[in-house]
Image 1 (cartoon, rainbow, N blue to C red):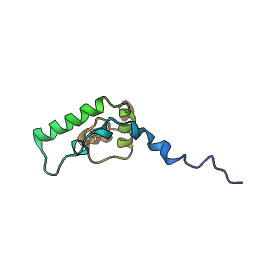
Image 2: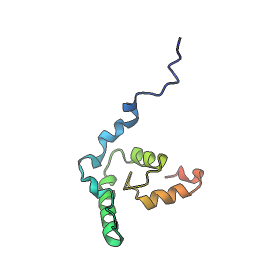
Image 3: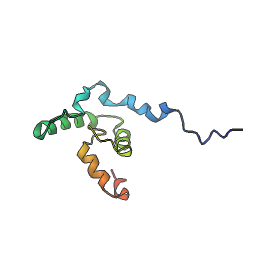
Image 4: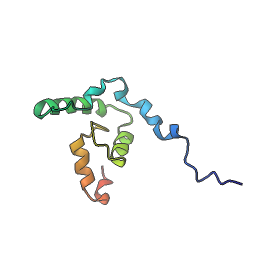
Length: 98
């Protein structure tokens, strides 16, 4: 008989948290910078995205996923690209506090 206990769970179980995201109703361009955006315009856009993340019930799951897959673009879980890169540059033992 086949041993099914080692098989992964349903995919929906892994991603269902996304349905609770505060960003689902927001304009996605708020979370991803347009090409060439720099300086204060980029900071303001990222801060507006982070404000949405701050009220999100699944911010922890989103942040963990973005770090796990090393998401290269956008604001995820209240973290910008640069903030995620800084966290990922730390030793793994130091990342657990994030």
